[in-house]
Image 1 (tube, rainbow, N blue to C red):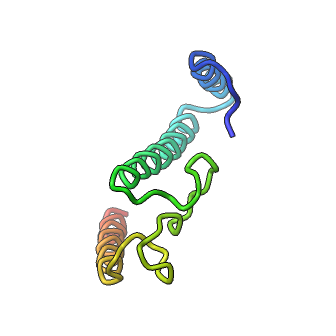
Image 2 (cartoon, rainbow, N blue to C red):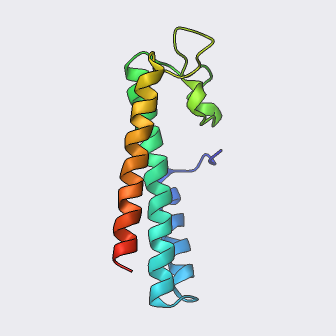
Length: 114
C-alpha cells in the first residue's frame, strides 16, 4: 500500500531516487534499469486501465480493486464454475493462441537478427 503523501512529494521521491542511481551506473546500465522501470510502469498502468474498462462494462472484481488483488479470476462471469469474465472459453483460447503466435513471431525475428 502506498503511503498517504502529497502527489508532489511522491513525484519528487522518484526524482531523488533517479538522481541517486545515476552516480553508481554506466550509461548502458542506466539505460537498462531505466527501460526496466518503464516496463514495470507500463504493466501497472495497463493493468489499472484495464480494470477501469472492466468496471465500466459492469464486470466488477469480486473483491475491492483497492485490496491489491491482481488475479485474472477476480473478474467473475455469470457462471460461478467459470471464474473468468469470458463467457465463451473458445474466445479465451483464440486470444491466447494469437498472443502465442505473436510472441513466437517476435522470437523468430530476434533469432534472425542475431
